[in-house]
Image (tube, rainbow, N blue to C red; front, side, top):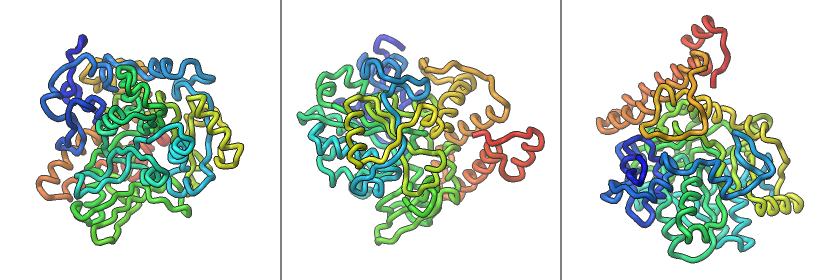
Length: 456
């Protein structure tokens, strides 16, 4: 599909649209599909265009992460096949001014964004903040913040579809310097846009990337509401990771605030779809992404999912500094005692995201065999079936949960029968956890035959 023959609708129909909105900026609108995902909407989305093939992060003609990083960063001190290029890697947290307390993790994302504003290095930061579901029809959206107070509204994790078309148009129309915060595919789209658009090239000064497992649909929040006995129309705010310094950081708690001011909450492990790795409500494009750590961003942030950090409920970040200018900013703050960071190597960072790398590299290599993408994507892994049987079954089960869950939820939602989805989700979760962790009667049976261990 070369020579500009690809349209946004083609990518969406192939199940490869992540809904970032890069293609819609200045051209058209994004809207909700039947599964609670954002997709291009309108006649413009049917029209092919050469520029689209170069800016869509899942286009077969777009530059890959390695090429983008070389163009953006030049030669870096370190290169790792999993992490990409980087200058320095750290583990730790923001020690200054309550940033750690308000963030899901160690507060580093908000701290860096705030520091860029405070130093006058940017005039605004495009990031995700809570929205009014009554007025906006969604719980979260991108916004440009221009003050520390506005920035703090965007702290915490948001496992919800968002799109950038509005803020990208605002950056085009309002002179200044900007930073953009986003997950890997969104940052890739921004970098691809910058290569094509001189205005964005000049005005987007920094990109702040987030490590990512996968994107969820809006139905994930609705499932929380079903399970917490809260009508979704009464929900005014969703928090996916309620922070409690007295509990391990990886004990997620879903929290809903209702119109009457009351709240409902539950730990994820009690939810029918609370196993993140199983892939409930996952965007289908995520199965064909090989970037875990925002390889094209100037600086990237994740959770330190290794001990002793994963047990520290206060939250801890791993940080990959790729832009030398940001490296100076970070080291100065460390010297001033405003950041409590310790330098680490690539292997440490990779271990904090080990499950994500297995799914995005080993798992992708296998998915390219049994479920190849509908467009001829060029990925940085080689297709392979060379896996133990149980690993293959785990990847196939994740694929089925991700694909079938959207359909079952849509059926249950239209029929007004939440129990239909919840029973399916619990059964799917039991099978998945038997395969992956050898839990339950089925897991014990598999262990007898295999003598295996955890297959995450």
